[in-house]
Image (cartoon, rainbow, N blue to C red):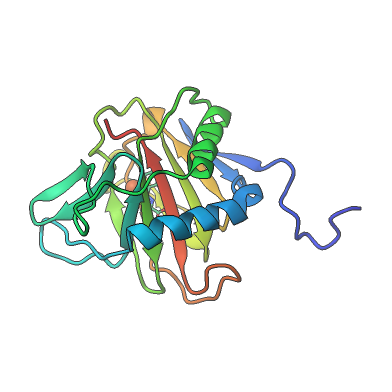
Length: 216
Ligand code: MD6
Ligand code: FE
């Protein structure tokens, strides 16, 4: 039966090159939707979302958690990866297999075979939450790409260049989209505009973003 109503995940995710080394795989995560949401629920039960504080003393509008051997944290002492959740003092929850398999598979498809994440940062946006332009440079070695998975409400992603002042492209990221980037664009500035209000059938008034990294 044809997918007359467009509600089946696409058999072949559409692929868009965003820049040198950066690939958007539209809908790549949709076939794993149910398992991803189960995994997310299990991780958040152990390590709840919290609003961390920047070294400058500002509370982030995005709530965060982590899973895997290392987690990204920020507080008055700075940005870093660490093996323990500062809230509990215990190791971060294990990375669910479905998370790791998706990240590794998407990386292969984007041209990064051999990527094995040791950290998964989980961002939770509620309407109004945003992430200002930044570079991801707390990882040990920038040869490894980052794999980003978007779930829930759509957000407008900003993708710039090596300087904060470089022009930015705006790319809508939808439920199920996966972005893989490394190589020449690994250190490009990027951010997320304030989330618009809405209601997602599975996640309500939220956007969740998983970013898989090789921290060490
Ligand atoms: C977000 N993402 O999509 C924020 N960083 O909510 C990021 O900051 C990000 O998507 C590095 C690589 C991919 C990303
Ligand atoms: Fe980032």
